[in-house]
Image (cartoon, rainbow, N blue to C red; front, side, top):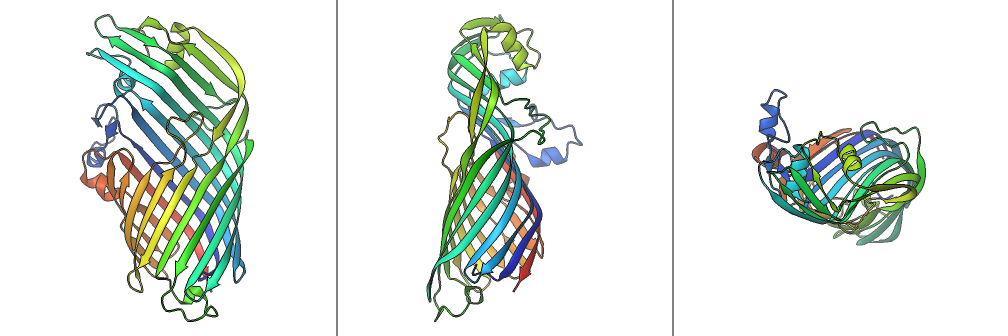
Length: 395
């Protein structure tokens, strides 16, 4: 569809992206630890009344795109994905739970909007793109991907009105509020099984505008006359998966309990100390819907600079959903037919500035949006890595 490719075949690609505003990582400490690095003991902590945790893993399996006509293309995309979010947890409470309440200090906490979701699913998508308008200096393209979702399961929790305090001298925890904890049928977040799947539907939608300064007529293919400016907008991951027969347990947290027998099993501790009711319900887990904005400017024939914003469209604190990390990135890049190099500088949610790099060498792409920051900083709050292998078939 107006590109220099007859077809594009993705063999396999994958990425992992995670972060938190609770702890900062020193990658050099990990590399020099000989495997003894402990995330609980060897990281800098930044506890607040509303800490957050995020992890996203994405594997794109064999997929392809090919041109139908000069103005349209079609593709098939297969993916496996997993998202994890914990939002608005009090940092001191999290640390106390992680340390089995082996704390030397009293503390109070207010986590009235605490919620978290783990969700794993696969996708099979059919993508269609088309040139909607083509004039000598202006080209408008649009595309849509319809996705059949295959949910592997979810774990979710929320705690409206949670607040309380911990007294170290008596090892007692006093709480108010309620905790809702649920899992889809037979879901185990330590051993995700894609053999028992639940179906759903999703949608991606996007448009790009390209401006050409020297293109005299639309008979010349756009890929032979490079654009000066490209602007893109898209919304991804519209949709949800309904999990019938999900088990939801509601705990009444209005109590004072002793923590000296807490043994790293939070569910057993809750069951033993708080009144609860268990029901079977339908859980509608929403996808991490996000808005993406792109401006890409060609400086010279091979040098570009781009600015991109990735913004979550899921309201923070929204139950039964995962969300993307808000990120704004500026990236210069060198791009040729068989080689590319780029160096993204990003401002990410959790007040984290990240600097990374990546290369494309023939069919192989590898990089990280935070590799240099992770190596130089002693308290990086986000980290990511991606790798891809594909076969481009040029015209």
